[in-house]
Length: 79
Image 1 (tube, helix red, strand yellow):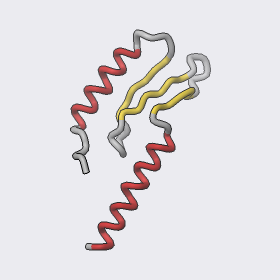
Image 2 (cartoon, helix red, strand yellow; image 1 turned 90 degrees about the horizontal axis):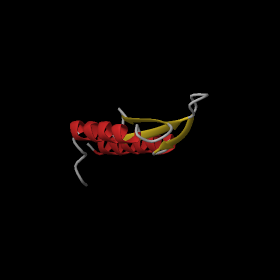
Image 3 (cartoon, one colour; image 1 turned 90 degrees about the vertical axis):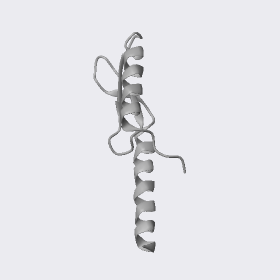
Image 4 (cartoon, rainbow, N blue to C red; image 1 turned 180 degrees about the horizontal axis):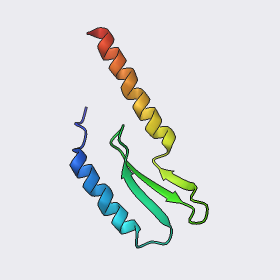
């Protein structure tokens, strides 16, 4: 399995992406999910503040975290 990306590198990429998105119309935010380490881009409605679109979707982040927990349980079970 590939090694997970360095958190510092991912954070820098997220910051650069966020800066690039600021030049576009709309309310964009870029962050790094603390649990999965994945870069998350959110587009929010400027009037209501509601999240219009999130990439990757929250369900994918939750599923990735669930898979890590399942794998962890299996590894612990075999030890």
